[in-house]
Image (tube, rainbow, N blue to C red; front, side):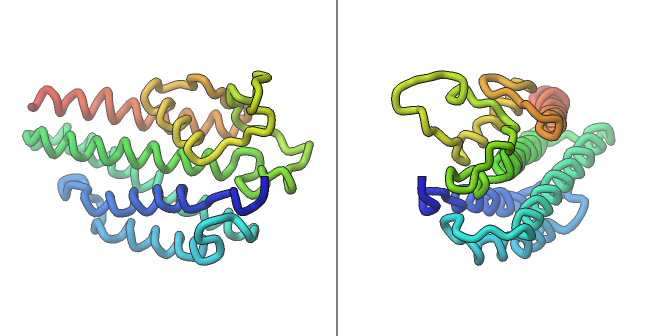
Length: 214
């Protein structure tokens, strides 16, 4: 597998889409101006796109720190929105069911995308390190995909792509637990626990209340 096949643009596009969605956060739960998140995210995303616009050709340690900082900001802001939404629910003013559904949907989608990129970025040292020409034997896998446990024709040199990590995040946010892909390291278990907790609060508490209001 050559470096030109390792694509960054799907992950960058997913993050851009989530930053745009921040402009649609209902004012009732906006703890800060809605343009702050897209502006801050754009500043953090700019060097990543400039260095590797479509494919991973250059690897710099600071690039991964910028990526992880962007993800931390997204997750933190999303958690703040969830907390504000729960406070809004308990205030007695939550009479607009559509506002609650919209807010819950935005929080849930942001949760899935942010953690999908996070898994993609940290598994076995990141996408650049996972390339066969850079992969080291001592680099432990953080996630155990089913393709890594079976011997099927055509899957011998399989490597997970961004879609695979996004699917892991999606299943963790719907099942609130691992499904077909198992977390192996403590750091991924912590991340998956945080993601599942955010998803559980969003769906079980906020979305359920929104349905009752509707």
